[in-house]
Image (cartoon, rainbow, N blue to C red):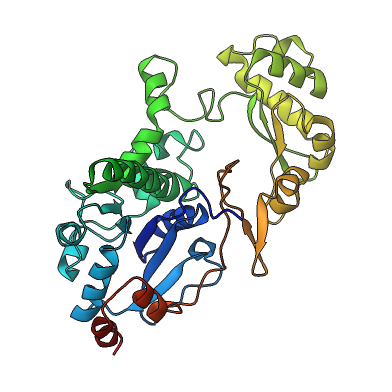
Length: 370
């Protein structure tokens, strides 16, 4: 069985929450050997699926010997990443200058909300703040106010994914040149990057700087969600004219009201009529009629339903790992498929084995763990 396209890549992860573990999961799922430095005595909940597949080393980084053990691990690593506020790793004696002195080929990833410098760099924050500063939150929600989305945009989209992408790009450079480098990932930067197309539409006059007034923000009646007779919801995305025509045919929206798809003055009336139509059947009835067609349709599934849907089941989008159902590795590779090696580990369960196998001095190991 393949261990994935990153087989042979060694990664040192300094334990954090949210986007850091998710980045580690992505690398681990695709074959990297990821050692996570955990705080001694800290036990993450089993439900933190993003910790899966790791080797967990528990160390007290207040001990100089523990810091030395980490530097010896860094000397054997291809990638190292951390998600602390700027300056924390330097105060621990584990900053990039020290680590790169031990291993000039090391890629040192740093992920924060605001970045390593700037007026906000040392301030606390969370996903909702980072997407606010980048313009994304302003564009999401109802006309009256922005909505509070899940922390997918900043933490995982603008943070973890950009960290994984940036470190792997730097790894390619390091392998070609022998020179490592620091990768500074700010979620504000990543979210701004994700918004590139929206900013482009705004510049071109194809996007209004508001909410529920545009093609993709809930303004268009043919791109949105509708409540059904049973109180459940469906989504439609009938943007292209042929898909819009099929929507009209399937749901019976044959009135002249719908003839001008892109006449914004008609959108409120069109939406009201579609609301009336979708309220006449249950979600499952609409799914039977529209599911799998070119209407661009999907039922809005809750978290318990998602894994049971026939499409997700057929693709094994969710898999059982140690008795827990969790999302499978993504993306998929034809030659070197990734896999989940193991469930989330107990903190420190691999400490001695990893330190020994990675070549940390025996005396350092004993002093670090004393």
